[in-house]
Image (cartoon, rainbow, N blue to C red):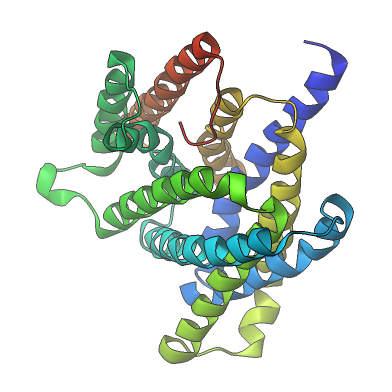
Length: 303
């Protein structure tokens, strides 16, 4: 690997670190403000922060069909994004564990190729082995006293992982017709506006909440949404999608490390074994796809 490729790979690794630690910021926000309030302010901050990035990387004029597609696709994906972040935030609010939430959310890396079966995409035996590992890990991590004891927070996080799956698939389908950064600003704005509207309806928003939660808000909005997405855009210019997906799967590991180092979270041996199984399933589902893509000579961001 030459120095140029190392630079782009490091951009993606840093993206995974930022996204992983973001689970800690989300967990910290629980005691400071409502879930809708946090998501609304966070994504609107992210939308604003991406404006100068657009000015740098997408200065050229867009065609009318491209602008129309970017807006419509951004609206659709923004709705899916709202569903994903809402389920995830409420799941974190209940489980109160950044590490556990990160690993369960990471199941979307396994769900993507499984859903691909229904879209006539080839799936190998090893993908199913990865699914078995992931489901086994989820059981060890979430079910402590028999199957009936699986928590509501865990179910919400699994639901969020399903939404992230369709979020990735839709982006892959829309990618050829959109301007990537402007599309992201639209989806972030849609998610932020709907979340904030729900906050005004269902939550009691106070300025003191925003003041006390300034650090989680700034991290979640500027770093997790704005900076991390920019790094992802730069890194994926040179790093193949399959390899990028493997790097992004490290997000769940960094979530666990962040929870342990910052929030002093601890899990039982059963919990750590469950995390290991989920992580193994994630890697299996992606490594197999990478080999198949290299053989066929094609790539896709939604494998």
